[in-house]
Length: 369
Image (cartoon, rainbow, N blue to C red; front, side, top):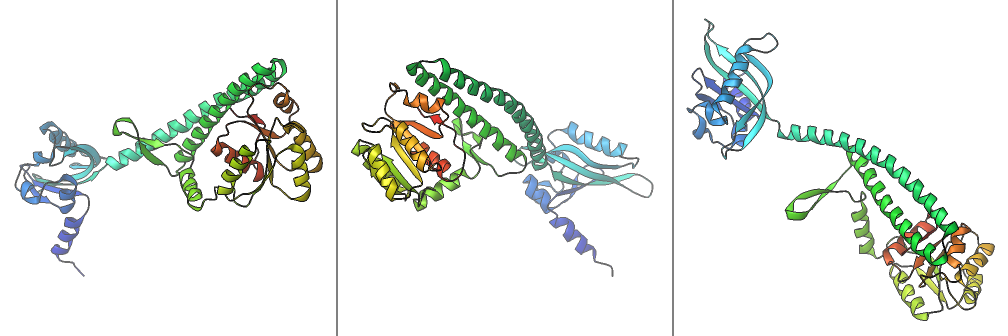
């Protein structure tokens, strides 16, 4: 069954790509709807006008025609995916790939030409992203190699400082080294995120200085998780049983209120001795204890807890920057599996450490500044 010419004309007219036909003098004879959408000219503004209207320069138009006359792959009068530049109604240049052919009469004389052009801006953008992704992965690999050396050297320095430094110097230098370690970890997280993005992971953008946009390299899904946690008030700590031990009742109450807002079940004890009594009667998931207390310090409480319940996590906290009783230093030197915070405590970091200690993730001994 033969289809009427109007059918094929309608197909060409509705094609989303640019289709333009010109006569032998270069006057536009056909201009489809795809051309209108991509270039912005109405048919009335183009039909019957020179094809130069859609080229940025006369030289570019001549370059395309010369390529068509030379032919491609041995076919005279044809080009395939030939890259050139069109111009929109607003004067904006658009890179396109054009497949076109010259039409001839029975004597071999040129009668005109028709071209099918595709806007390749998005294709080029994707190609650039692929290239950038490959560069980013290679760069991340090199950065991670250097970071591995830094991590190892920081660990060696930490061990050296713990052996040779005095108490006051030990506290100061440990905090410096741990600060370096935390920043190195941030860099490692960013390089890991770059690798995820290069493999097709999701990413977002955020506004930078001057209204410019930049890629958001925050941990994948972190913002959504944080928002959801804030919305339901759980923060991931809901249901945990925490024993707070401090001879300052104000601190006990403030920590109790803080953790109860995260839906923890919180008990308090005013001393290490009282804490052991409470612990004998009730089950807990974690102990949060002051270091310096009159009857039993946090170090002694830690040892007592580990003798009876070796799997129960203990977090120690202190307001002293000078470790006059060697409690912090002894804990680190003996490799005790506890986390030591300096007061005032950062609530967000405290929540993170509690999650690490109670949800089975590794949390190496550390002193927070």
